[in-house]
Amino acid sequence: MNNERMNMYTRLRDHFIPSPVLDEIFKNEEDIQTLEKAFKSLIEDGLTDDSAAEKIAKLVFKETGIEPDYGQEEE
Image (cartoon, rainbow, N blue to C red; front, top):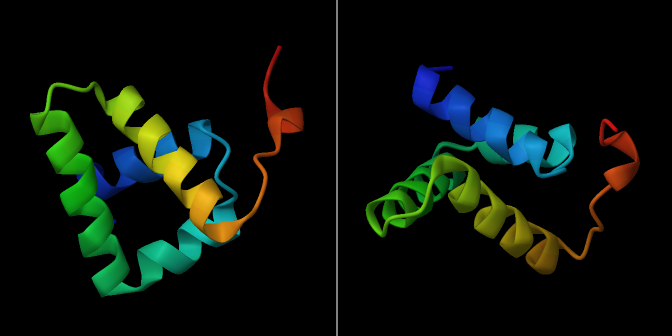
């Protein structure tokens, strides 16, 4: 996995998207290209990497119907 994809993966995990969900996205080239385009577009619009990941995470949760597991958050 290249550094750009690793950065997206890590930031999306930081926003509580489960690894199995991300693994499915990242193993499908069409899905990862869509994710990369969305991420880059948000960055070009002036968002930070973290803010872009947050927006994408919210969309993933909305589209999949899964709930974030905040129980894994460090205190």
